[in-house]
Image 1 (spheres, rainbow, N blue to C red):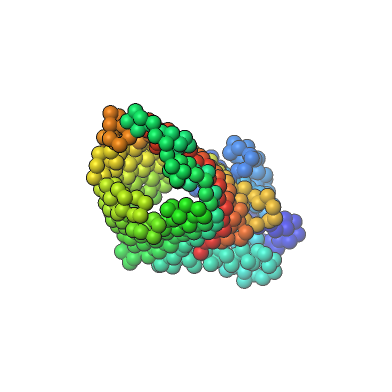
Image 2 (spheres, helix red, strand yellow):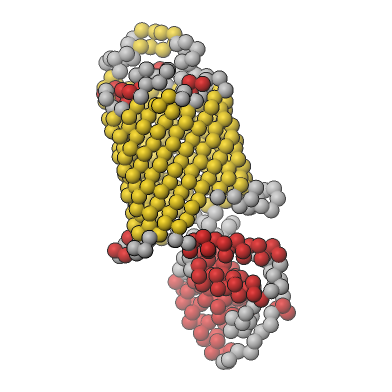
Amino acid sequence: MTFPKSRETFSLAAPHFSLALAAVCLALSVGGALAQQSQNVAPRTGSASINEVEAKRKALFGRMMAAPDDLDTAFEYAALSSEAGDLEGAISTLERMLIYAPGLPRLQLELGVLYYRLGAYETARQYFDGAKSAGDMPPEVSVKVDQYLSAIDQRGAPSQFSGMIRTGIRYQSNANAGPGNSTVTLNGLSYTLDGLSVAGEDFNGFVNGGLRYRHDTDIQGLSLEAGLSGYAAGYRDRNTLNTAALEAYAGPVFDLGRFGLDDRTLSVLLTTSGVLIEGDRYMASAGVSTTIDWQVTPVDTLSGSLQYRYEDFSNTKSRRTANLQSGHRFDGQFSWSHNLTQDLSLTGRILATRRDAEVGYLSSSELGGAISGTYRYAALIGEGPAWITGVEAAVAGRGYDDPDSMINSAERQRDTDFSLNLRQIVPFSERVALVAEAGYRKVWSNYDIKSFDNISLSIGIQSAF
């Protein structure tokens, strides 16, 4: 939001005490916040370093001490405090300016935004309502305020419902994950694969989406959550790859603050899923998962999860031994996310999976890791919402329990799986965006029939609600 900065637009009220006393109060509050350099949220300093921002704040603080009724300096100091993540410092500065300009719409707007970012939604609502009631608000600013008020209403509701749907087309250079070479070695002998078994490119049309419902109960710290996600893809040439999948979950989410564990939540969810391939039932599963999330600092989040499910596989027209994959599956994940700035974040993950199938050569253990980053920046075309670029690199090692006697009776399968993915989100509005993705996956295996690589490209339209 931008507003005129000329002091001529302000209607200053006479202070009820001397400027000297105001300066002392300002020094005690703002100076203390500056000395502590507290961060309530992630900094959003842009190209400037946090040290540069703090140096400017210190200089502005001196100017405010000399002229505590200078609203321009106060607004500039509050803006820098917000950039540094010190929302409370920005709020205390602007609230003291209400002494000199009570009811000033610009002050109330800025305070409303700051309180919203701090999570004090009802206080933010009071300032937004005060700004609207003052009148003379530009139409574009009024629309933005209405969006904030709508978001506050949604957050304050005991029940929250949200969802997303995306549809598009995808190209894959190796849609069936087949080996690049038609000649493979099976138990020391060379064999030639048919055309449907080697790597083959293809296009598909896809649709995926999800729904999430959350209800805050009357029991302190207890919410109930349920969700549904699905995916479907139809291929141009290889209809044996046509897939549809659906997964659902439901269970309680506990806010652990009531037990003295602030900024931590624990969820325990029942899960179920099903997969169709070629229109046939391929897999059904049921299980339970638990996740703990911890907001360690305003810019650091830790998350850990464990999941168990039983997977029941069925044979299909072209997969005559799929039932041998049936068994128990265990997944664990630990992740750490850090916001370098308000617009740039990094996430690291460690993942582990154990599958116990009906036969040893399909039972496996897997350990891997991934690192990803997302960056938000001003739209390169037009003046719409920020664009988002994301990138992720992952690698995992996978080993099977027993040799596959059909491929190599003397040596069990061992794979190394690497992937690199890039995503670009170009919003048309707050809820609709163009999403383009590019990915590369490479699997090295001591079973040459299991080695492959694949390049994928996709583009689609995504809508959130």
